[in-house]
Length: 289
Image (cartoon, helix red, strand yellow):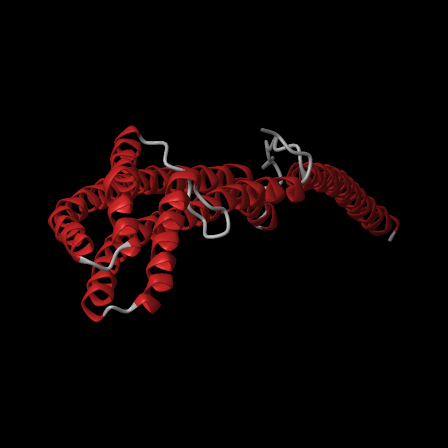
C-alpha cells in the first residue's frame, strides 16, 4: 500500500495497532462479562441446594415447635427457590446471565423443575396445611426425597461447571490465536516501517555523506511516493547542479591554465627574440668601432 505522505503511513500503522488493541480489549471485556455471568449461574444453582435444605429445616422447626409463624418464612423460601429457577431458565440482563440454551443444561433444569412441581413443592404445601401426624409422615417422605433431589441439583451444577470450563478453554485458544496475530501484526509493522521509512532514510543519509565527501555522481533511487521521495529528488537535483558547477569550474580552470601556458610561451619567444636582437646589436656596434 502506497501513501503520499509520511503522515499517511504513520496513521495507517496507528490504525492497525488501534484496531487490534480495540478488538482484543473488547473480546476480553465480553468474555469477562460472560464468565462473570456463568459464575453467577453456578452460584444461583448452588442456592437451589441451600433453599431445599433450608425449607426442610424450617418445616422440621414448624412441626416440632408447632410454630405456624414460620409458615410465611417457608413460603418466602418457596418463592425464592422458584425465582432462582425461573431466572436460571430465562436469564437476566440485570445480573448478566444468559438463558439456558444448552441441551444438557436444559434437560437437567427441566428435571429439577418437574420434580419440584410434581413432588417436592406439593409435599411442602401439604406440611404447611397440616400440623398433625399426617404432616410428620409427609415430612419424613420429604426428608427421604430431598437427598436425591439435592443430588440432582448437584448434577445440574456439575453441568454448569463443565460448560464453564469449556468456555475458559475456548478463550485460552482465542488468546493463543490473538497472540499469534499480535506477533504477525508486529512483524508486518516492523517490516513496513523499515521498508517504507527507515531504509529510504538510511539511503538518503549515506548519499548525502557521499556527496559531502566529493562524490557528486551519487544518486538516489527512492520511489516511496511521500516526502522522502521528494527529498531524494531534491538531493539528486542538488548533486546534479553541484556536479555541473564543478564541471564548469574545472573547464574554466583548464581554459585559464591553457591561456596562461600560451601567454608564457609567447613571453619566452619574445624574450628569445629580444635576446637575439640584442646580440645582433652588439655585433653591429662592435663592427662600427
